[in-house]
Image (cartoon, rainbow over all chains, first blue to last red; front, side):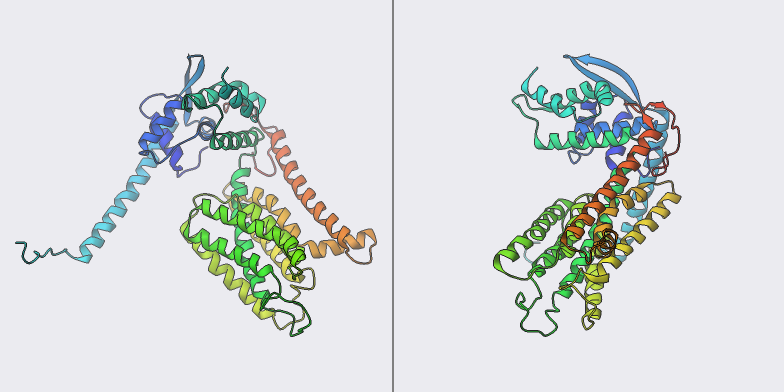
Length: 122
Length: 333
């Protein structure tokens, strides 16, 4: 069982796998792209996370290939993983909605900003 | 095979054999895919990543994967305790020699130890405003000062704190190096004022009493009280977390046994002294007790990990090779 709420690397790994199965190198690149370069997973960390996700039944092994003599194992999101990702996305969306509403309320309470023309420029 | 591949293979040997046979080529391939073409040696970050991954995998294979989160929890408790003690001893440093002018002091302070305690308080200040990397760097500097104060004080002929104070502080500091990178900001901010408040108020309340033995004795009852308080907090945390099926607290308690034992070194040495028939706890008795505390605590941790290993055999890719024969008493798996 993987603890929820998911940590950001776990969330992004599941998100990366939501479209299609991916191998380790592809996952590292995809997670970096999804986080706009903020999160750079290293292989030791990635495979540790994949171990936990496979143990928890959120990710399954899809297939294996050998490219240029190197083994590539592809991982895919399991139905349980998709359900967990859906639930986590709902939770995060709810938080974002609540925070956005509160910030709008705060902005309204602060009142409209009056822009005055600068003398001599109009 | 390139030099780089050979060196990555060497590092991969840190992983358990079973896991390496199934996952080794895949992990190696990913490192090589990511490596610059001209690179001949794994980077320091890659080596650290492989080492951390190997430790994690060995613990996972032993069914003790909660140990690392448990160490993180122990680190947080150790950090708060180390800061609290630094506040306490910083207050004690202002009690020079009960007015006896013939006793050497370090300026207005009792010993040169004030530098060490201020360094530990600064660690908490750094932790409140900067990231965990800076906190760890500050801890390392404080550890260096804690270790260096003994030879430096002896060299320049100045009074220093006793090892009864320095050794538990260093042990707590070493454990605090495992602090979690992302802790809530409030936790980081409250550590210093809480520790300072508790530490300074206790030392101020004891300033006029003869029982306060920062300088002349084994640290008196305060160290033991601190050890007992740390044990109580750890056990209470473990009990609360266990109700939620979370074994982190149990591992944290086991990990904390070493600093807790060292905090209680005074009474434990007196006990050992009685057991071996010595008149008083001389240095060999104290040193022997400290070694016994460290070995006994480390041994109990090793026994718990071994018990988990016997209870769970997990396959390299998460497929249990065998169902748990019995539930592990520590991690509950």
